[in-house]
Image 1 (cartoon, rainbow, N blue to C red):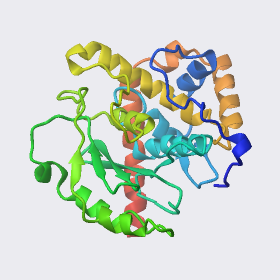
Image 2 (cartoon, one colour):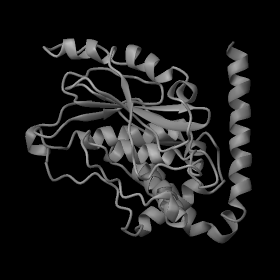
Image 3 (cartoon, rainbow, N blue to C red):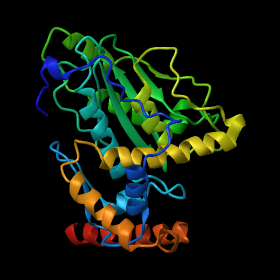
Image 4 (tube, rainbow, N blue to C red):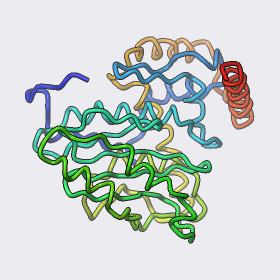
Length: 296
């Protein structure tokens, strides 16, 4: 990505998604279109200069009844990185990695987030490149030992995922490979909402490496409200990704959504959506398995 000049940066750029602002008409239209089980599952819906590409079926997985596909998370992280470029130069610079852990030049980065999918559950590692700390941010509060729950994955990533910086802080990078990994304590950690990758997406969006930290989640004892927050963020992150200026094909996708709104009856298309989306996801994974077997 090309660097933005200081004239295009702003310390007041508000990148945090509000939990309380209603969805605009354009958001509702794009959400209905992307969740509708119509058209080819392989139609491209997001494409950026970084090379990140996301097809329709990945965005259909944002339906509340499904696990969000890792490629859908990648598109969201890609947008966060783009928005990070707009911030003022005096602020801490953060970057998120895709679920394939692609980390490149980090000379100007303070925080690196790596989302991890393990046993159908997302969590992330946050690397503090300035002070050498590593935090594991996981919404689940299940009482398991660290080693049993994470099975050595954090240690493996901490020693292999961060390349050396090309400046005087190289010694700090060496420290990262030896430091203890701290599991971050958070009031909103859950027992029942243990599989929602939306928590991890929100954590990556809002955490600045400092405490106190408040992503605006209510605690699980108010589960109905928390469920509503998670459902709303699925929709908000879906439209945020596709309508981002960073999406090179956003106009094409938006035009398709407008045409869909004119010709389709949402009440019919979106009926029984849980089962329809699940069937299309099953179809997609079967095709992916066939492709994988053909190349192996």
